[in-house]
Length: 199
Image 1 (spheres, rainbow, N blue to C red):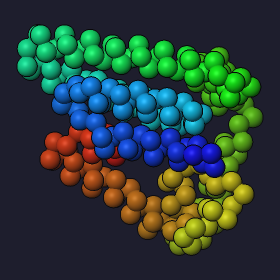
Image 2 (image 1 turned 120 degrees about the vertical axis):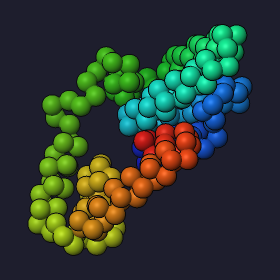
Image 3 (image 1 turned 120 degrees about the horizontal axis):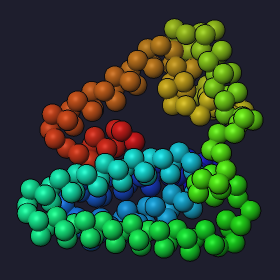
Image 4 (image 1 turned 180 degrees about the vertical axis):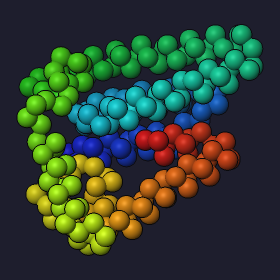
């Protein structure tokens, strides 16, 4: 987690997606979502915060839609549980932010909206431009598996990483894998799989 905050946050979210169900509210799911939110915040990963927001935005309508089919009483109970989750997570996050480890971090300002997420001097924009220039030099074959790990800092973009490492075939294969998994999960009406692929 300390060496790669984005990877750590993604692992937390992937584990969360594999544990929760999307057709009803369970107490365990609320605990898992709350703990995941605190863990993602502790990684200070901006991408992790966005992925977690995506998962919660998928989870909430699925649960509410399922509850609406079962009647008003079930719907009210589920919405109350979701509000309790939101309040508990907010309380936990505000307590966590007040801890010493977050005192000097600019990421908290980014996550709270007090600071720009991508500033005018963001180094990652330059890394993407540099990576795209490398892709254009060897678009078909790439530079070989693991090339992006030899760079000082990689492109911070999984699609560019696949293209740099494995060329156009690697990029197309990766996109095909995601699309095929998405279609399979959609055909089987398996919400956790769709949310995982989206994340």
